[in-house]
Image (cartoon, rainbow, N blue to C red; front, side, top):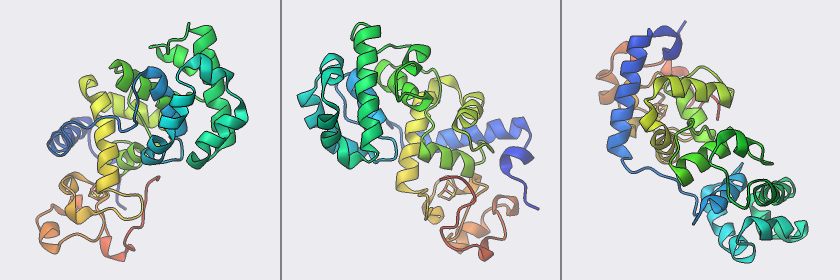
Length: 252
Ligand code: SF4
């Protein structure tokens, strides 16, 4: 039976693997950063709430008109729910998202003097804000590394790369915080998102093109045979040939 890298390798090897992964990602995505368009912490807060179950590209299409009409927390808190729903409809789940951005705006306006708080506990008190959103705002708006953003890409890649065996985002974040040096927390999540979009997609990971292939316990076909021959047997999760292309063992 194949054991997952996370389980089978002792901590020292695990740390070495993470160090190698970080080194490779730094070469591939040295300036990875937030891809949600925003001019201030409030806009990033709202954009991140809207990004749930939606692409950043779609959110970036929707937010300019939204922020033009309701530029700050007070304006958005006073906006008619129906008007918000119409503006954000294409991001999906627009009933609950409209309520969340209206109520989160009200919280910022009434409870925090109109300024998005730069503290995890206070952010979590806002409607529609869980640790992922709070970490995005703290990291990308304030430069505060309070945790690691765990979105769908980070969740999938952390699992595939053997950095966690958990499926719960809070536990995944805990594992990443334990393994990744704190100065890299903000950048690392952005780099994994970029790698997830460009190479390690949910349905069809492009393992043959992946610079992390030699370190990945979830290596899948199609992998160039010359590349596979150069890998230690333990790094090829078998039996690779019996799996369908795109088949996923992990979340996402
Ligand atoms: S080797 Fe494949 S599964 Fe592993 S990180 Fe790269 S693309 Fe993803």
